[in-house]
Image 1 (spheres, rainbow, N blue to C red):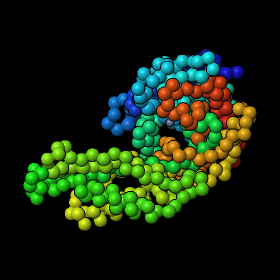
Image 2 (image 1 turned 30 degrees about the vertical axis):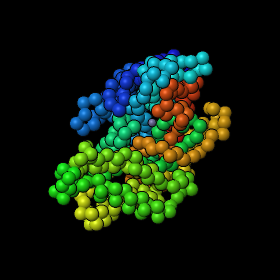
Image 3 (image 1 turned 60 degrees about the vertical axis):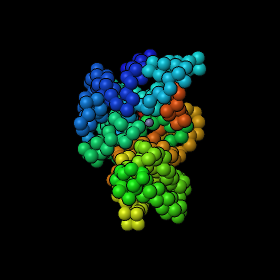
Image 4 (image 1 turned 45 degrees about the vertical axis):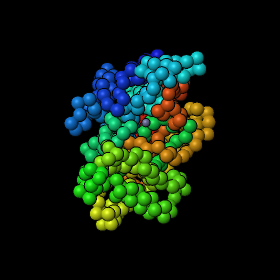
Length: 389
Ligand SMILES: [Zn+2]
């Protein structure tokens, strides 16, 4: 017998959607979940992010000792964009006549987060866990830098974890490997002067233009790809510099976004950028800084493990289909949570919602899918741990 009715399960999702945790206020989500867990005798702890008042992770556990399975979801959502484009109030969960629940975060990923939390409550109440621990880790900041996940990794919450499930929207395919991301800011410092006397200044734009040019030339020689993840990508996406047409600019910057793979990972990109910096500083006498301000590693596993097999067999059974087992170009908190884990680590990203619904206008998840995932997790997690040898 379930403890929470379907009505309550949907209400919990609706409550979470109402908390407007757009790149902040994860603490409000954490407090909500903490109170929910408390009602069912599950202790949890709030971990504040350094120097932040409204941002925190939440960790809760069910069971005892080893082995440990980690389950994780992020509590932040992305902005709504232009709300005039929405046919529904983004922060009021609304069901349409096709059984879809609309709201910001309905797919990415408050439905996955709620499904994990509810499954913990159901598992605890049913007493189906015979050995081991399920560690629930709700994170802050996934949509920007994964700083919440970075904190969990740093504090050792992943050290004893044997298998990790992230409930990001991926109902149509179980993901076990994904690309990394990296954002690098390159700045060029000069000295301002009137443009009639440029010799008194130093134009910051010129070294930056050289930097971008040399970088593109060097990167065009990179010839790597992965069967699962394809090629890495690198793009200059923002450029700024100067503020007046008759002044020599003292500052210019460009931002770059990279998608990384193990064969050309974040460290290789950073080394490439630093080698170009050296060249430009030598040739142009410029002053360049390279600042990798978002740095999320690619996640690579072989996918050959019992955790993934169980997820696949239960997914096939619960949804009556033959699920894809696949890779993703998107990045998750696993970039930090799985730092130091090898290729043979058991990682599964599998959760309610279509991948393509993430960050969309009128974002939705099917109510049935959300409810089915709760039952799936409620069976999967104890089954994996009970069978673990
Ligand atoms: Zn997400």
